[in-house]
Length: 308
Image (cartoon, rainbow, N blue to C red; front, side, top):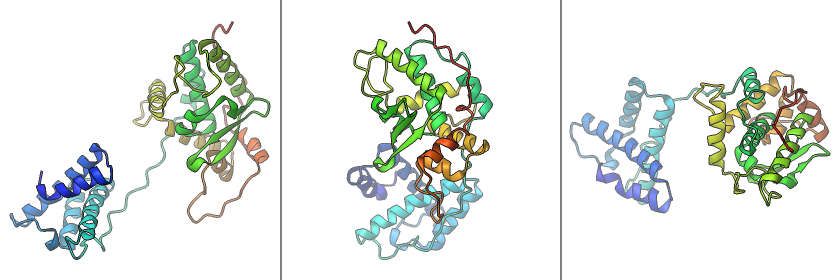
């Protein structure tokens, strides 16, 4: 590794607190530019002050010609941009050669989602056992799919956040913003069955909704692993995560007639777009449009095994 970048990498590591993985990514990207510059300059000494904008543009063009994606090229450009900002703050260079350089435009990736048929096959099938973990995992998947909540929101749900009479769920989203989400009768019965089993399995089960069999809380990483494992039974897609279920929820709602603004409220988004003017809906409106979700309309009961 070219030692010239070490002070900057130490700055990222010790002052900015970047992870070892991130620092290594910066190292690779900067090293790649260093090698390109040396080859192009035929061994001329690498002096940041002498680097010109055209040389950086040529490097970006060469990356694109090699078939590197625009997203990866922009990541490499970001690393080089951060390096020169670091040099400017320390008066190691007088000018920033990247100040007028824009990266290539990336195509917006379409959200991944699971087909409704595949979700029904999973949630109505025999994939889940009738023990505590099986009942918990089925409910967890149902909640993520039927409400669109984030995995961090799922982790934080407490028993007191569930109002069985009103059939509402209180979740705490980003920036501690709370919202109420309505749920249907089928999900209510699943919650009741799970809580009954939870009380039998765990001595102190009054706090967090989702826990392990030993009573310890589930973490976001455990939830990610469980969702990925369960979705693997019906989907070969590369992305199998709680966030994919969030996309799936929104897709199912919109495909079944829900209005975009209503879905925005259920998801807890602050706006439809940065410049959009959106309509705030009352909670009763949200309860009405929630019934557009295909799972909310189902009446078939799920056999959880012997609950006696």
